[in-house]
Image 1 (cartoon, one colour):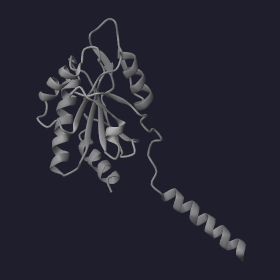
Image 2: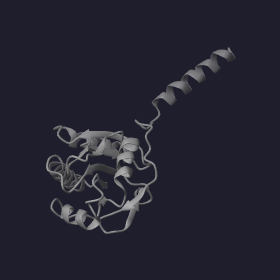
Image 3: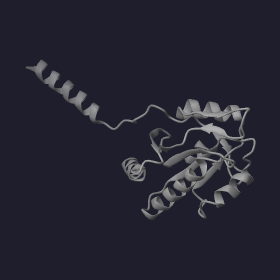
Length: 188
């Protein structure tokens, strides 16, 4: 009889542990500190306990970056209207060109609210290529044959512990609804 209760107890524990909330990804962002558009150090220590959305852009981009920035600014406005507190982090993929001053001017083209948007630079090309690949499993590649940088175009939702929750294609019509659902789920 006791064995039956022990087995029942173990099965219940197994079921309950399967229902517990886990990170959808085991990918926790490693600690970093770069330079923001105000020429101040900014990194994971500043983002502790915050939900954040990440993008990869560069100011000389002639294709995808302007629409990405418009979408990010639109997302910023929608989240603020819904009372959702989120930090936005954009890593330049062309750090030799994109100084903090250049990034600050670029950001002004898309939003007047930069208090929760951090445009980061202050690292080498090699560093951002490795960082994007290892932390976000996305490509960043600067070629010698063009002034354009190849890079991923997804937005990444990061939880308060620094784990990647999901990535979103900004061209999907439902991405805003999906990212809001994701934010509400982790902001309990």
